[in-house]
Figure 1 (tube, rainbow, N blue to C red):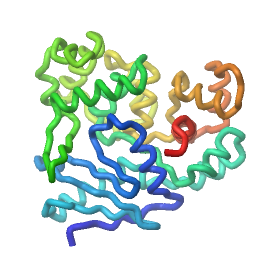
Figure 2 (figure 1 turned 60 degrees about the horizontal axis):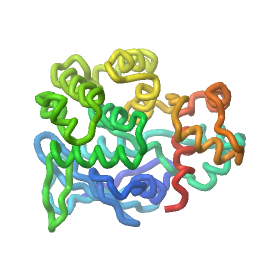
Figure 3 (figure 1 turned 120 degrees about the vertical axis):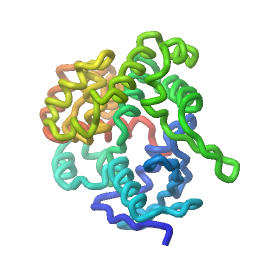
Length: 297
């Protein structure tokens, strides 16, 4: 059969994941409906369209237009598990959060939401750098331009699907090429430098995965353009570190203020004190608080 059935640990809510994936109409790397998400994945040298459907305790992965080998199916399964954080036991997070004034209502409302991330390190770093000190809406605009200029595409039944640009292609660019897409000069330089590091083999996710979270964070911080927020964001979203804590994140501060109903945003020190209560789960707490900012979609 040209599909796969993935067991998923409970709690898991596919609809909640779809809500997160649907949060911007400018998203260019996947297509969502109220029941499925479609994504073009680069598996080896092939671009394969993948469709995910939720089924109670499972996710069904379909390949609508491609014949896919067993090896390719294994690669797709690994990619989906990483993308949707499907190998994590959330029971300890729920137990901790049930006792927390900020998290308890969010966990009840969005139970089964997973920390959806970026399996690809170049995409994670590039997206984090694009988003530095600009609105989320403008960040999506720039990402769309970047993907449609330098990504790979496949047209299926009149719809164009895209993959994120390869580091190898971006490494050949000069900053002026990205300036045309409204990257700042600094961000253009940072992204191209990172692409060259990845292409040259001095920066790799697989090599970093064997290291401790603190060592990964230090390596990320050594990259030009990567500060504390970017490093912690990439730890969360690419390395699936549930304890990574982007303590200065504007959205996190907005969400805490909203949940508390206070007139002022919390200070950094106040946010750190919340983090002490969430020890080991700071990343998941942040992700659920972000979820509270875009309501019921």
